Image 1: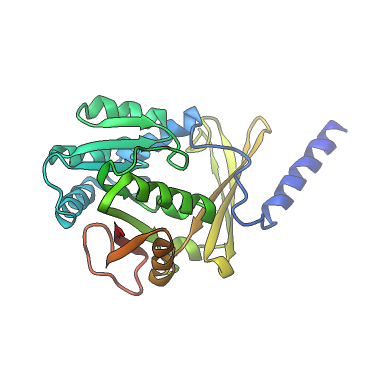
Image 2: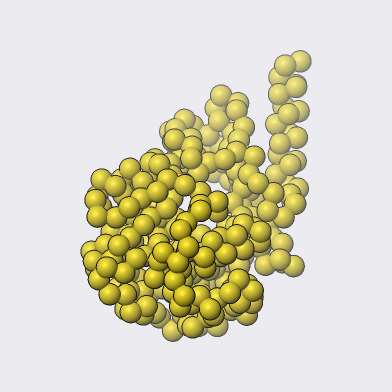
Length: 285
């Protein structure tokens, strides 16, 4: 009977995987501060051969140089790095004699950042709820599509808080995925086995991924079901909102920003209408 009951429970979880949840319904398992997953995220951030969590070092260098030049940031200027992770961008900005404040939800990543960058200030906080002093930064950055994972209410809260923290005329640089992004059009389902553990768990597991699309909202969902060899089942959801230039411009204007530049990325590359990424330079109006 126990085996039958367990199989029935597993079947119900699999059926849930095939069902589209309500738009931006939170993940049943919170993973950003999971100790094991945090270690895997840090490894991905620091891997110079992949863009899985952070872009490659040469791209990070170019981004930091271009942003500082585009905003005209002089030594001593104050910069806010939201979602700073292990401080890969913050360290480059600090190397240009900027006064950097990094904010991230992962204490594991921040420990690395503090160890390798004693010149910047790092704050362990959820930047959706962080209360910063008004008009205290000349520039702010939110890099590698972080805005895309937020629902509309959280997105608007973050933009409101960034605007409040910027000095009048201060710059905000960030990038978003466009509806042309390959992640938005990936196969609807796939599965794989990790025989000695992987990103999600340190022990063997079967991972099932179902990709749901919400075309009326230009939003996609990666819904993972991780089944461990112990029989434990965990579900994770990663949401992504994909923005056209017109859509994100309208969002920014409602929050008191003026778009002063559209680019293919945050190295200043020209914007391509069929590109997967859109880099924005905006100023507080």
